[in-house]
Amino acid sequence: MQGKNTTKSTFMQLFQPVFSKEIWTKINQEVPNLDKRVQKLKTRQLTLLISNAQLQEFKALRKISASVQSNDFSRTIGLESISHSQISRRLRTYTFQ
Image (tube, rainbow, N blue to C red; front, side, top):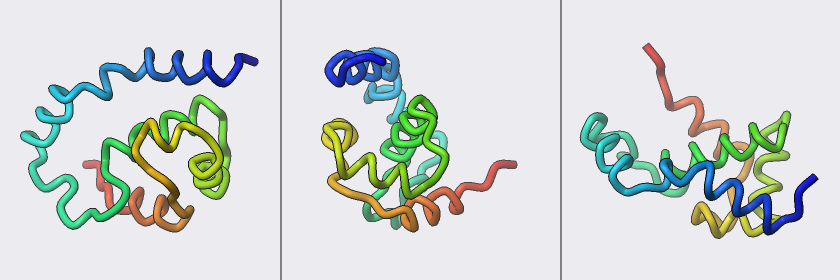
């Protein structure tokens, strides 16, 4: 298991393309109303949150929400806290066709 600083830097290196403004500008151009009426959990934050949860092998939304409250990752993605129900609602808003 890697230390916290190594894990954080590895995550940041891995997801650097996801953080780029160019990518999110292009996504917002393709889907202009993607975050319309979204107050707290933006698509960019959700993407990073779920990616981190996958890497950490979290099995439940409660574990994901607890991870945001307990480490520096929350500052990295710009969230102080998020509830499991907010994550669930946000995931339900996506329809894949």
